Length: 196
Image (cartoon, rainbow, N blue to C red; front, side):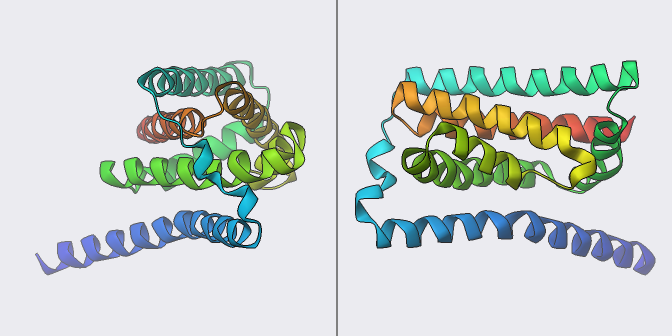
């Protein structure tokens, strides 16, 4: 019994460290956003919080589409043996990491990342520097190293789509919802990959 408790504590400790390693960059983005808004009040993102159920459902649809496209890319890379670094990233780095999280952790991480990253990249960077630079900056945030360049390229393209959704809707709720749904489905897919 004592051995089982020690093992459980070790797993919880690892889970907690992983959670903080994912959350700290998000909180840094949020802090930078708050400082930016205080330095330049004209850039206040609250004007972009326009809600409608239509935007919510569209965000869910876009998020599901992004997640399916991401999984299809992984499936293509695995079947054709192209982009072996992508398979390595998914199977040896991301999948084991997300398999340590509980369902609540995945939901919270998805929502927090979607909110913090969209406030910063779409709410602040895009209006100030344009959709191209904000998409490239978003891709660079998701750049785990030059070996995994295709992942950063995918994130850049996703950032462009999220930026486009923001531009046509004028609301941050659309990209926040899409981003959160994409993350949540992606994390569950990674857990499934790890269990194979």
